Length: 307
Image (cartoon, rainbow, N blue to C red; front, side):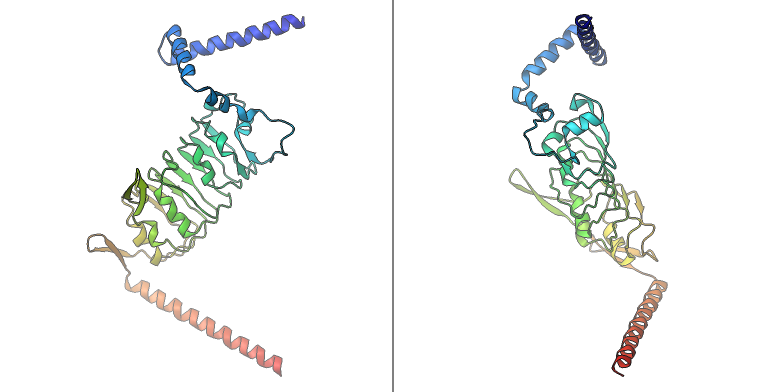
């Protein structure tokens, strides 16, 4: 009975394999014989070391050092999504898994992965650059504090969510070199201003040639809500984004919208109305009074202590 059981299992495996070939052939509109021949030629063309590398992360020996239980590697993804081939994964939701480290070499094997939701972990942005074809990446609530990115990274990235992290204005400006990025979410990062470098030109080297390029050259949608931005440090910088269509600035310290004027063809300056200047003068005077009252109160306390 045991012998017949294994025979049946082997037959089922072979039957599934043949059916899969037929299914793939139908999808490509080719005859089965032609598909098998092309598939065989394609496998021969791949170097043997590449085939071995594709699954070497599945081999884990007991003699290795203890594995980090919160490591994002190839085995974790295969096991989580119940697949055998990294190429079969196109969408991955790994949010809330407490992941804190990425095995970057494994990630290059998931060539068809285009959509990653990695919210609520502790992963850095740069580690995802080996997902070469990723188009949508969500990294909200990952305690990201710095951004390091190169011109050749994330060439296919269209949408990036970095909400509720701890980014600085300078880090946000570094994201401008992602030339194909269309949607950027920076909600809840406690940003107090946008630096001049946010929209300035940058220089990179390609084939020993220096090339000057615009930042955020494809950006269409920008989320800056729930920050600490003020009108003095925002609108003139944002006005340079040529393709921007949708801008979200709710829940900031913005009380008025200035008039933007261009001079010398490419320079933008802000012009505020009289009501804005009155509010600003009144707020400055009230802050000065508050500071003087605090100083007087501290002096009175010191005198009482001496008495």
